[in-house]
Image (cartoon, rainbow, N blue to C red; front, side, top):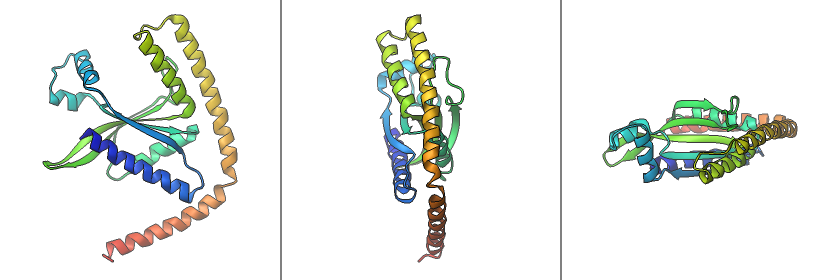
Length: 216
């Protein structure tokens, strides 16, 4: 069921990505990736919570069994994608955490969403939770490095390396802000064209919905 939930989300995000490519000459989504948490990780997480290893605890307490990552070019793209996900009629946002505006103490920066996706099975439709992480390429590079370091030191990272990581995070944040300002300048020239295309597209979409509702 978690695989099915990810497949549905991937389809929705890919559709939005293609729409932006065609209509707006600009795509806020660079690429996506997804994964299902391993059985060992699930068991370890339940044990850390002091819970019995059963299906009910798994469903109720672990939100990131299915995970999706969306990588953007610029910081404003993150919030644009969050808004689009919130507007999906059959996806419910259960929880969100903005580590972009307020990074973690370690320097980690990303936007996290826990969403619920309806999945149709032979026994009926059930709501499945998926964690979505949305970040820029610079944020993703830093997070990947932090993960490797934590793995190497089994999360007992020496203080000097922690400091270096935090310094790198600050540099990454400055780079992201500069790149976002550059991106904003580049997009200014496209604004009017985007408005015209969007208005035309909205008209076509409204006409399509009318014919659908009329059963044509």
